[in-house]
Amino acid sequence: AKSTGPISSNQLLSVVETAAKTGAEVVMDAVNKPQNIVYKGLTDLVTDTDKMSEVAILEVVTTNFKDHLILREEGGLIGDSSSDYLWCIDPLDGTTNFAHCYPRFAVSVGVLYKGKPAAGSVVEFVGGPMCWNTRTFSAVAGGGAFCNGQKIQVSHTDKVKHDDAWSTNIELFKEFTDVSRGVRRLAAAAVDMCHVALGIVEAYWEYRLKPWDMAAGVLIVEEGGGVVSCMDGGKYSVFDRSVLVSNGVLHDKLLERIGPPTTDKLKNKGIDFSLWFKP
Ligand code: IPD
Ligand code: CA
Ligand code: CA
Ligand code: CA
Image 1: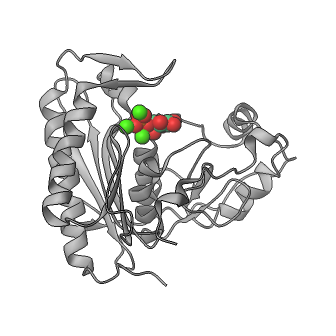
Image 2 (image 1 turned 45 degrees about the horizontal axis):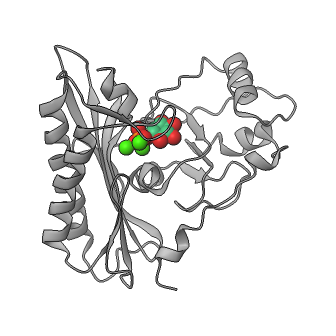
């Protein structure tokens, strides 16, 4: 059953929203300014803005909850490992887009209670140079999904053509490009999920994600009436690495098209984040 635990849903929602908004203010201040970029990997970059946003978000969370466990993309794990609450902070989702002043990117803050998403907020940056703006997605377990305070819902589109199974990311991209009105790769997981919840995109899949990419977005999708699973159709948790998100009506049809994983690489291997949990 969906639960926010001993902390009321209102309080949890208020803190996730304040935290995401605080991070977004830091990002808004920095957008369009030159960025100091450091490479964490070949294509994985981080800017000072990611770090500053994370510090600001952390401050909001720890001021409100002194004894929670907090997982930050940049700073790692901090707090009480025996806590039932795990915060997942992505201080800037879509850093590459941000570094190029290319919408979309977002700030994403989600909190899990006993491993399940309890509340989440994503502030998406829209517009672009000369007209930056934001919109805020939020959800609390059992309370529906909202964008700028208005209730949102996934789309009702139910059509996907039929074909064989395939299994690599590029094959999926090709196939879905052929049978749909097009596939877009926005490169900001939290934004992709919010667009499904908003009903302007039907589905989204990705391999190799991390808990901070997903914690807020998956709840916003589910509360907006959508469905979230692993790419093999299995039950999804934010500790899994492959995800399929849809408007719900399309979910089984998409899974059928995706078919079983053909290579080990694409099998849904969870990374062992569970060690950060109270058993
Ligand atoms: C990335 C984005 C992107 C996804 C990557 C993530 P970041 O997050 O969500 O869409 O493909 O796997 O790492 O690093 O910009 O926060
Ligand atoms: Ca990153
Ligand atoms: Ca991310
Ligand atoms: Ca990030």
